[in-house]
Image (cartoon, rainbow, N blue to C red; front, side):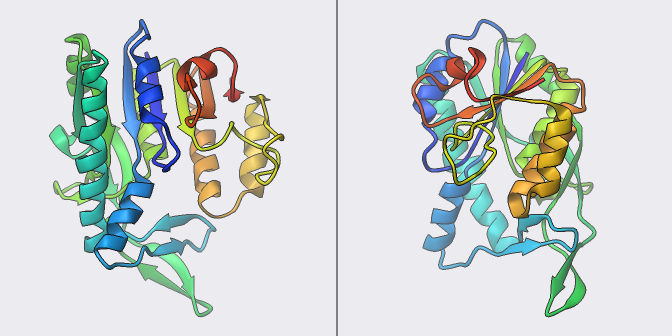
Length: 263
């Protein structure tokens, strides 16, 4: 089982990714983002995207009602269904889902995010939360019948309401539920870099200890992503491959040694 996380950046080449996936012989599940598309929709709605940083140093998008509506339009609407369409044209029997459908991703709504504003710690509450469990029975039923789940946010909170969540955290929970041996993450970079400003500083192989050191040095949203990667690496996954989703044959390049490999 392969778990494929497709980033939501504007440079990601979805058709190249899907063409590669169509050649795989083993089953796979897709988790995708749509952050660039969401930002476009937010602008068209005349809204401002709010990014907040918790007191512990992790940055995230503040998910009020308008932000959640934009997520529903961008992630679970336009990007999900266009990706399903692309899969079908390459003979991948895809089923587009959010974590909300059938409670595929059961989450817990945040009780509040502690942030520092004007030198004071305050508690901000929004429509966001963390994934806690996966409806494994539903996913395995789809996979056993030859379907490929294509999953995105929102996820489901305790009372059945839609909430935003981090796809990196969702990938961790799905990997554990399905015991996926390989996780491929397709991003807008060659892989993980020693220096984010130096495109030639690719790290081809990374140990868990090295990953932990990178998390300690990271800041903002990168710190959150490194934390999720650490969690994924400690879950018993065979390998995590982080590779460039902007190139031709991105999946095959990753599986054949391109990008960064964490084992």
